[in-house]
Each structure stands twice: as C-alpha cells, then as structure tokens.
Image (cartoon, rainbow, N blue to C red; front, side):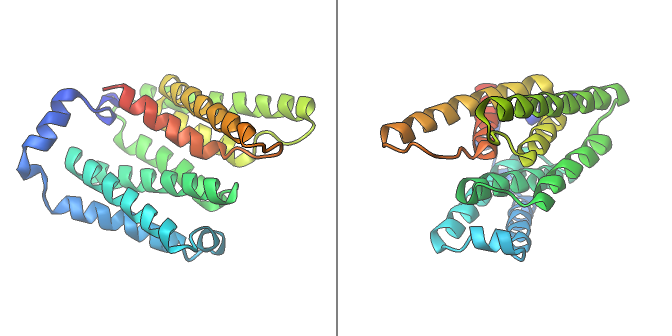
Length: 225
C-alpha cells in the first residue's frame, strides 16, 4: 500500500461534490477534533500569546472548518482523524510562525511523533515506511548542513532547529520527493515575500520558514490534481 490516497484526483473531487452521502457525522466529528486541538493548544502560554486577537482566532477556526470538511468528506475511518490531527498541528505551527516568528517545541515534536506513529500504523509494507523514514532523516540532515553553512556565511542564524524538525516531519509524511517539491515552492513563496518587504523599504526582516513550507506543501499537493 502506498500513500497515493493522500492526493486528490479529478474523479474523486467530482465524486465528493456530487455524492451527498459522503457528508456523514464523521465530518462534524473531524471538525470538532480540529477545533478541540486548537483549544487545547491555547492553554499553552506561547500559543495563547499568538492567538490573542479575535480576528486571528476566527481565521484559524475557519481554516480548520474547511480542512475538516475536505478531510472528513474524502477519507474514512481512523485515517481521517489521524490526518486531521497532523494537519491541524501543521496549520497551527504555520500560523504561530507567521505571527511570532517562533513555534512551540511541543507542537513541532507532536507533529513529528504523530506522523511516525501514523506511518507505522497505516503503512502496509515495512520497506515503504523505512524508505520514508530515511527520506525524512535525509531532509533533516540536508537542512542541518544548510544551517551550518548559512550561519558561517551570513554570520547569523538563517535556519532554526524547529525548521529542521518540521522538514523531517514533512519527509516522513509525504516522502522525500514530494516534501522537496513542497520545500521548493515554499522557498519560492518566501523569496517573493522577501522581495515585497524589500520594495516596502524594510532592510531587516525575518522569514517564517515553516509558514512558507506549509504553503509550499499545499501548492505541491494541489498541483498533483
């Protein structure tokens, strides 16, 4: 068994919108799961500081609502709940990184271990899991090397430890090829954002890399259509 069911296809997308019986109670449970994880995360002070404003909270709830509708409609069984948990934590990391330029380690490592746990549980073949595990470690090693060279050249931190952990999680989830595509698109979007900041006259700024990696994974994901 491979992870091809993570990708949408035109037939599945059309079937989703034209088949009303897919809207069962699990969709609402998946949405509540995402909202519940968000509520629990807000008990942590760094998370609470990041979600102070009402508009940011509403935006997060709307995003999780949309994700719950899609994941609850497309997938069934334990897989949809596991995937909603992983995606919810990834979205929270992206939003917190965009707002605070830092992410809580416990959420980052929560994604890391949740992805590994799901990979062990849902993968049908040991070699496929080991391949993705090695790919995730390879991505982490690559980013660790880039961090060392970046620190030497720029004489400041260009990559955080949280970025390396998140990239490893992406490799475990999507495989090294798809994760690299996501990272590529994330870097493209990050460069575009940096150019916009430069045009606005900002000489010193930081790029929320996890935010752009998540956006890049979304771009690569939907390009698979």
